[in-house]
Image 1 (tube, rainbow, N blue to C red):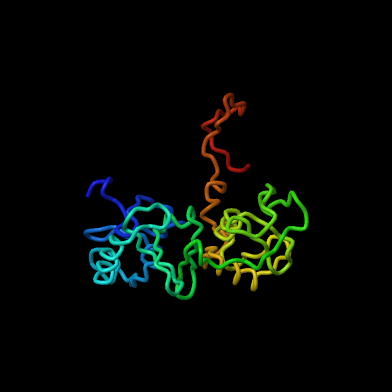
Image 2 (image 1 turned 45 degrees about the horizontal axis):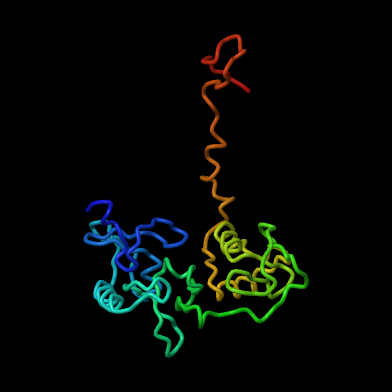
Amino acid sequence: MSEADVVCMLCGWVDFDLDTYGRLFDQIWFWVHEFCLIFANISFDEIPRDQGTVHIDCAALTRKVKQAKQKQCCVCGERGAAITCAESGCERSFHLPCAKDGQCVTQFFGQHRSYCFEHRPRQTAVTASATGTRCAICQATVGNTASYHTLVCSVCKHAWFHRGCIQQQALNDGKACFCCPVCQDNALFQIEMSILGIQIPDRTPAREDKRAFTSLLQRPRLCDAIVCFYPGGRELAEEEG
C-alpha cells in the first residue's frame, strides 16, 4: 500500500494528529482513525491479533461506510460523512475533520454523542462585564458573549478563554490537573467543558512525563564551544563537573 493510499476509511483524510483523530489503526486492508470509529459508534477491541491489528466490528464498519456514502457533510458538502447529529429528528452528518470548521461538537465521554452546529450544547447566555475582555490563557481579546469560539467558566464567571486555548490546556494538563485557570475549580468545570466538546484525556500532565525532558538530562560528551580553553582539550573527559 503506497503512502497516497493511507487514508482513513471513514473520513477519507490523511492525518496522524493523535489529539485530533486518535490513533491510526493499520489494519490488513484498510486504515481508520480511532476517534472516527468512536463517533461513528463502531466498537473495537484493542487486543492485538496475530497480525498486530486490533479487532474492529468490520460488519458495522462496512454498513457505516455504505451509509456515509449516501450522506453529505453539512460543513464541506462532500459525501462520506459518517458522524450523525444525536438530536432526535436531525439528519445532518459531518466528517470528524470538519467538526471544528462547522462549529459542531463531539463529546469524549459517555455515549460519545455528536451534535451539528444547530443542536450543539451551548452555555447559558453570559456577557462579559467589560469590552476588551482577554483570554485567561493567551491574553488576547475574546468576544464579549459566550459562543462556540468563546467560552467562560460558569463557576466563577470571570475566566474567559478561546475554545482552542482551553482545549490545548486540557490536552496538556490531562484529567488529573485540568481546572479553571482563574478559580481553579475542577469538578464542575470539567463536566461543563466535556459537555461543550472539550477533550480531556485521562492521563498525567505533559509536564510530568519524564520522557519529555530526557534531552535536558543528557550530559554532552564533548565540549561544543567554538574555542575550547580547557588545557587538556575538548576530547578529554572530566571525572567531575
